[in-house]
Image 1 (cartoon, rainbow, N blue to C red):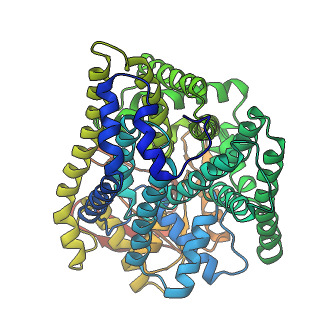
Image 2 (cartoon, one colour):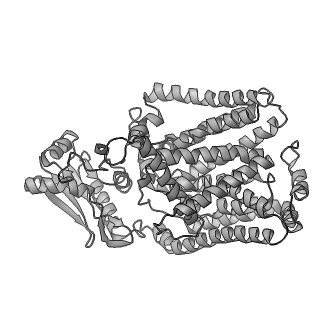
Image 3 (cartoon, rainbow, N blue to C red):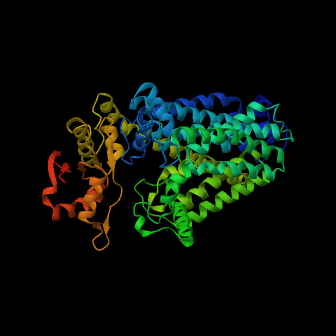
Length: 566
């Protein structure tokens, strides 16, 4: 069906079943779904909004990256033009900075924007790909995009994922429109100026919102190279460069800043992101990193996101990883064989993004977010392969439907379960208790941050292991971030007391917030994050008068505020 000239949407829907090869049983799914396409879309949209409502999270995540983006946005406004966000891709903090400039620092408003982005991301995904493949393939993935528990979680958080899903949907939407106008070799730039510019804009935005998405440029160039459409290659690159060059000129003239990749490269090259003393990764180190990330993402995170494994599971299985890769590759081969051009382009982009992420990101970060943004296309490819393999006489079609039904049902059940568990928490938060839902260690740490903002002089600079979270709950007070042991003594793995004191004096740090944050959130007996303890314990042993306790927060799992006396 993908070799034919693009037909109007209604015609595509009416003829979809006739073009779907296979048994009448699976054809009947298309016959049933095509005339009800709009009803299905609005039903999924309503379910997605309902899940986002009952899962709404008023708090900041313990992962603290969302607070990092908020702090970045705040600094854009209050330290302009001396500050430019370089921890990773800068677009989302730039957007938050614009919001803060317009409405001030209003956390709930930022979260509502995430909900809007999540909704728009689903809308664009659905509208981009509806009618371009059998509904038996598309609908279970649409359910995943609308109802996945982690996507719904990000719908009310200030992580980049909701923002990114919107931009990814925007790229999908315009990419398939460009495929339509180039299907018969028609790639005129002037006649389709708006579409080409929107494609270039979407490529620029997505690559500036997530560093690994820079592969969007080689992916689309490779696609048109495969199609032997060299004009389209040039138009794609040119439309992207229009926006990229304007952006780079603006950044360098206003902020005089380095680009997003230079800001991250030093950490990404390290063996350990928190300990540069271990040196940089060598070639074999990157190979091992790739293998480790494959195992973590494709044998653990992938199935957690489907709701098939517990989120507490730490087991990885190389055979499961290989099986998952085999299914994806078979699906990709099927996409090439069937000549589904839309899915070919999206597969090239998603595959390249996964490979780059697995190479550049240290395995110890092991976050489901890395896999999540790639899963809709991964599932489309996998289901495409399974559909073609099982769509034969006998039990094949029934087996396929069992698989996709199991995926969709698991996704929906996982999301509703988490939503109803969360609802009592969000009711408490909406009534003003912003700490309800945190474990005692986090409550005391965040209340200690608030105490610092309310009781210390404005010029006081407090060292904090989770400085961005201290910043949010400290009402915009700047904290000094500490992510690893400084001035480390290799014999003890703790700081050298004199060197650490000299460092803090040079940085004008006046206080330290010493928390008791759990290593395992579900097990208070498993130990605490002791980075700051390993810095200040040697100081306290050698110079007990240099640390003056001025505040204790909580009764159990306490946090302490010390003044540094130089």
